[in-house]
Length: 421
Image (cartoon, rainbow, N blue to C red; front, side):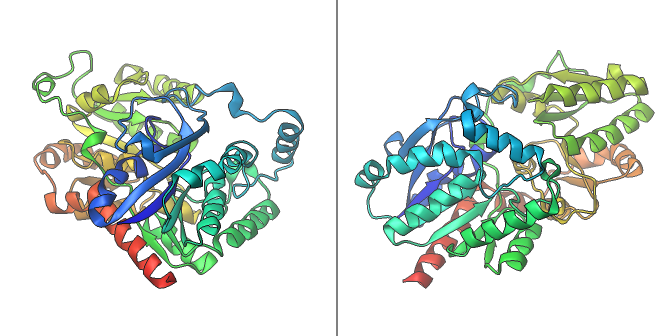
């Protein structure tokens, strides 16, 4: 049995998609020859803890107080001289993803306790650090040196290559990529979540990159079958369903869907929003302008079991993504939500750019359709009854389970260790 040290800012019980990636995979690693240990933060939430707490080092306080994006600890913001410098750099359009504010907080706290951590850990054979923030990657490199072990950089999302983050300058992006490239030069492998992102990291940094999808797990959804015999009485059936955080780049997709719902007139959109409030307001105002405010039900965040209950009775579950085609990275955005919806009964509609990597997932699993235009969304709703009757390809859906992805990750771990011995 080999030991893998996983460094992740997000981890259960904190309830977000980032926590689920390794938070759910860890329970499978031992059956594939890897005993997991985790460095993370203290946090609150209702995500199930699937790894014995004795194997988790919690240092510092996670910023997230609840699932809502606007409910953050005050300590999340830097203060004093460091905070002032950080603010000035952002105002000057010099923002970096490779060197983040957590370098001055979480990284420093972990580094100060490295002796105690190493005393409690067995010999580490491999370190896996997951972005973001980038501080996790810097910690990954640090502990790999301490143990003379290889390390893997895991990117759940694109890092320094992000072109339009906070309106930063091209020079800032160039510097950011130089720093990220230097950091990754010591990594033995990169893993990421989609074909497009894998291509980007291989091409930009010359690193072999493996794909480990976010996947789905039974822990994502409580199985309360007795509740599934009754349709949610407070929801306007028939309804389409979305639960999660709203991003600015989702807005165009939401607006196209609302346009189609106006034409249809019979189907509602139920949104369980994690914020931010400003984007909720944009959507509600647009619905009112279209005259379909009565077809939009904007609801606050709720427990996972309620989301599961409501999602199971929708006519279709919705994934919103970026429609822009002029930026490469958005083609490879495969949100964790996409996979958690795969095993549910209703089909899925993914509203995104026409070349999105989500299209291949939908085709392989037969669980839904990738659409981009108003006409495509309209045709999807016309075909909804036949799609509801299709349960998809069960074997392909299972290929995207957390267990299948954990097994794939373990084989990558084995290969990396074998090549560095």
